[in-house]
Image (cartoon, rainbow over all chains, first blue to last red; front, top):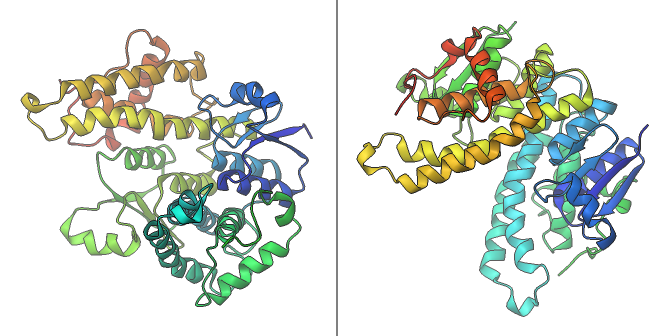
Length: 207
Length: 207
């Protein structure tokens, strides 16, 4: 197979979900920090809008994380279940992670990242945590005590592992009221894909 | 095949692209105006976020237009080309239509819709038209004089036909500087899928 390059930003949840997908699929991927001075011109050449992630191989350059994931699915068949209705459920959960879960956690992470805790806006953080908690019953309902969200490891595993991993790094845990989600996340962290794709800047648990 | 219901809003570009896809695929679909008083409770039951379009069959309810299109592709194989790189290009163009083209035209349509022309903010309209024009060279480049954007009728045909159709209805034409895009749109309007899916509220060309 051709060399795959991923232009990446370690703490970007869309990048992390692509890194997880590549790792789970066993693909050899050159991960390139888009801010590395020696690679910026190369990244700008494949990223017309200046975004990450961008996946590049000898056939195509793809600058949207969900288009990248569908491309990796088309190449390997390894990121979606087989039945159309289950595939739709997997894609809807991926969308839910990108939007509802992402919007909640962004409030917390943008407030805490790179700031002295003395200057954190605790109201904004509490609002983000509350929105995160409110988004979890739907996920617990969808997981329904199963091993995976859509019958096998698929898009929502990539998406939500990255989101929950970032949440944990910024001090937002899955509450005890959601034991099946806690157990699911613990299983995801124990997979070989987790540690090597985790942002190095992220502490195990940040206060 | 099971009965497919589409909860719909006629002038919504995301709904129109799904209607085009269903028509092109020859699917029997019951189109339900989500605002019809007799169907609102039914629509709310399948649309947790109160959005359209929603596709419902006996297996699944899907509330995101791109997840609906991927589902129809999974059922029929009729909305994407075969090669992974071409499929990625089709999905990227669909995304470009949803975002770059959509954001430009929204400024025009939201300003004109349901308003007396005497009260139109001409500056906002001009800004939207300018953004639309600026977004077209990329599309002309991608079409590259071909019959379709990705080798065959696929997602960008559904997405861009709906956007260009709405633009035309609100008085925004494709400029003569883009003859291949003009000819492409003319061909799309001549397909059997265009007239039956077109919003009835839309004049042929609105001033």
